[in-house]
Length: 185
Image (tube, rainbow, N blue to C red; front, side, top):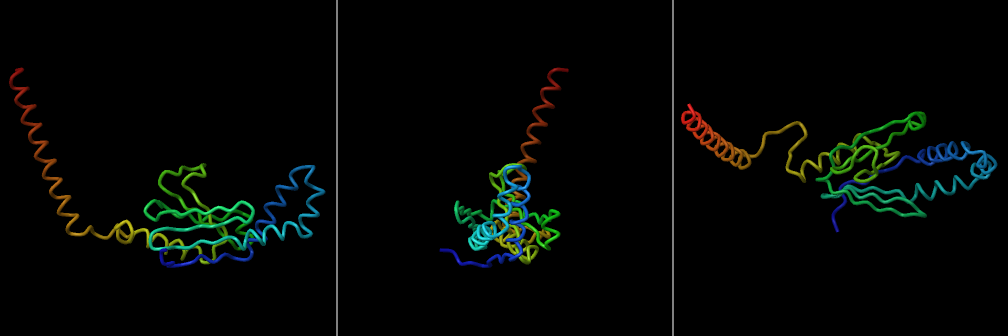
C-alpha cells in the first residue's frame, strides 16, 4: 500500500450544487414536476448527502485515487505519469455557490469522452491540490519542475551521442546522393 501524500477535502456546499443540478433536470420534464416536491423535501438531500460522504480522493507517490458513489460505486486509480493536465472549471452554478471542479485529463482521454478522464467537483483549495498533483507527477516522470529545469547530465550526454549518430547518418546520405548525382551527369 502506498503512502498517502495528500487527501482532497470536499466543500459541503457540493451537496447543494448536486441538489440544484438534479432539480433542474427533474423540473425539465413534465412528469418530474410533481416528484420535485418529494425531491426537495428530503429524498434529494438524503441521496446527495450519501453521495458526498462516499466521495474521496487521495494523492499517493505514484497515483491519484478517486472513489465515489454510494449506489453505483466507482474507484479510479490514475497513474501520475498518465496525467497530462488538471483543469480548474467553474460553471455558472458552481461559481454562484463559490465552488469549482478539477478535471483530470490523461493521455488517451479525448475531449468529450469519459475514457481517460476524471472529475473532482467541489475540492477545497483546488488550485493547491492541482499544483501538488502536478508537482508529484513531475517527480514521478523525472521531468523536473514544470518551469523547464535543465535535463540531467546523463540524459544530456545520451542526447549528444544520438545527435552525433544522426549527423553521421546524414553525412553518409549526402555523400551517396552526391555520388549518384555525379554519375548521372
